[in-house]
Image (cartoon, rainbow, N blue to C red; front, side):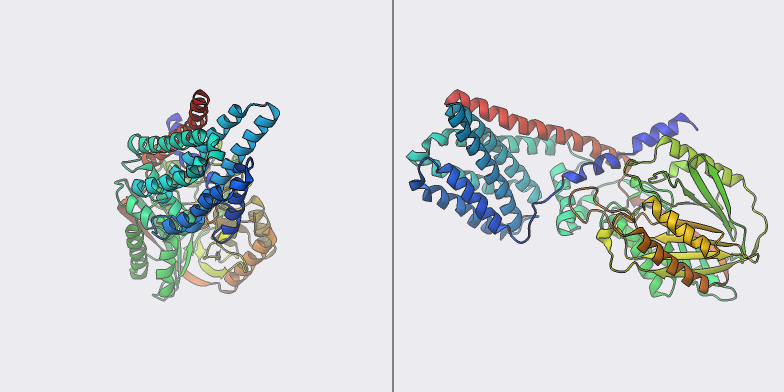
Length: 589
């Protein structure tokens, strides 16, 4: 294999770097508006602040509890992602850091008899809290600087004003220093990355806010508006095998192998496209099975208009296609090379090559696996059926094995073609849903049988990959039903991604849903397909869509590079807030 292909493959896998940041997107635990938790943390901060003179406790209490009223008023303005719960959650964090600073101060005073050291720590933590407050508010407001400044200035005033009381005056200087340093750094950091770290001309804070709008509120409008400004386009190829009963005109089954990536997450972009296709065709009585073609995250379609157009065109061409049908099928052959396995199925004039690395972990098979290969009659299907926590992207050995097994498949001559029998069945996995890793298409099965009685089953499950045990158990049960060949595939749907904050962001099939439950549901669908076998004829419909807006590799590379640069700079800003505030406090006391 040419070294250049492997070198470029490594360069293109920027999505795994971006996905590694997902666990940092988390929210505070608890339900509702967090008022009870906020009341408790404010009380803790007020008591610690007034510990030297509890007779004056009403002053910080009045000021700090006023923040709740401010949060309510600012949340009623309805800007971006701001709501009462999020402002309260942010205040809880601030009160926690305030309380830690005060606790360290008292401990330093008691243990080292040095109040200055304690005041330095107090000022540093105030600066950190203020920095976080400003940055988070700016992101929540979709980069609204005016709103951010108004909110953070009012909160800084309410945090500082109780210290004007003579009994608390010794904390005034550290508090002012912390508030000034924190506010200055959040303005400097946010303005700097917005100006110097633009991603394809988009401000990173606006882009982050738009993505969080989907994760937190399920709102796609902000990201769609930003995505429309991108000029990255690509050609999208979609292959379909359509089946109709011999002697009839109406299409009954459409087996669709798309060249777009069903992502990036939730129902944004081409994550929703398979369901748009299925919806249009099912309304016309066509049973739809959607597998996974060759694609990676550079084939994520980002325009809703493009998705609607593609779905409509696929539906129209499938329903109006009426030529070049065949009633013949060849025998299924299994090939192996290294860790790769290919099921080669000749259906009509087309050859399906279904590829897996099972039981080795596998990820997206990129289109570059076909570089240098020209065969219009071949359709490569990525089984995407063997998840491993250790595999974030297709490695060099896996890519090489897949490329070689595909090359072997293309050299094969399949003999013994006979009349085609096709069956279709479907089933849902009851009591489980998107958050458990199963998409709305559930389980869909295509079975092929020739006149010699040789049976092949393709079991397609609407999920983002599957633990290896899923394929193993289903294949074993299928053999007991008399199937000579069985392959389990997943759609790689990303509609299950990003539904919960933190962690990996999704569950591969079999991680939450018991493998036995999945196998049982799949076998029920397989039995339905077996009972529906009938003589059919098949035709191929191939479509190419030009100038489709996608998240290109250039965009992903720039996003990955600048996200990590911004993160490193953010860590420096945190360090600067702690050091500068501490040093200035030490010099002025």
